[in-house]
Length: 431
Image 1: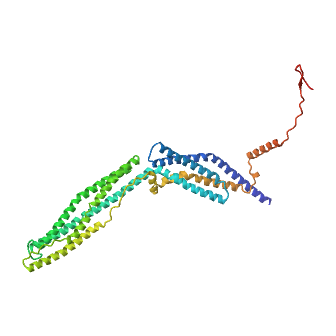
Image 2: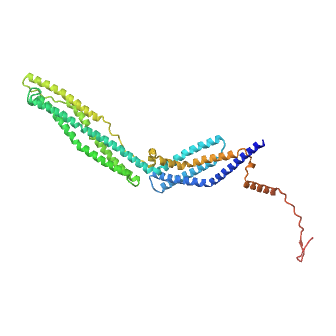
Image 3: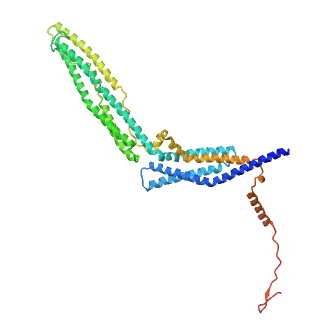
């Protein structure tokens, strides 16, 4: 029984020494914790000031004081918030108190991220995020320009289809002139129908060909604008003036894309193919005999059937181009550094991590103190206070007891002092 008690006593003594050692470390760390919190809060306030300044349009004194006031408020709030938690959370013992303070810490951390961390990220990576926005906008404009040019070029390709149909009618008219079609040589009614449609298709072909230089010129100009926009994206210097120039170039490029969409002749070809068979001016049959006129009518009917087939083929080719997906409507919207760093947060994860870490790093210190205080309490568990007194604490206690004894000790009464009178000649005498 004695041996077991001695073992328990040694364990308790080791726990007390362990707790005392941890307390010494905690006291030393307390001496630098306030300064460390102050540095972190000040650094966060500086970056918050830079982030707020990027959101304010005016650069006057009022904007300066507004940004400075906000950043100071953020620094003070961060310092006070973590100071409270470092003092209170490691000291509470009940589970309900710990859960309450941990919930408070979570809410406060979200508030710090909302009022500070995103502004810190804007100060760290705001310019790069705006440049990312410019680069993405260039890609969108490039896609729209290429799609508009593809539609226009595909529409220009209909010129070959129109030329093929025109050539077929010209060949038929040549056969009719030689008498190989209706059996009546010359330029009669059948020949005039075929020549009428050949002329219509020739005019449509010439109209399509006249659009080609405009399409080529618009695409070349659009690529030149894209080159200037790319140069503005990577050009060194402040991003704000570059954004203004970028916006001007974007407006010009949007006009070029609209012009390319209007240069597409596919709708025109589709309407012309629809009118090709519907609008036929039938000439008067000029055969000398009834049989000749019957042959002409039969030939014209066959020509109209062929005309309808060619028109359907041409309209189908034009509708295929019309059905191509139009270029996406792209509009450049200027964006602030704070908004850009949020929109493209995935591309700037290290900056976001640094911005959040500088605000929430004290949470790690809070958990470290919680573990240390729990270890101290565990080391002193089951040991009376009289066994944990240090030499300095014992000396201080003895001094307090000594002072209490001095206060309680009765004051000795002194003997009465006899009265001394002076004689008329000035000598002292006792009565």
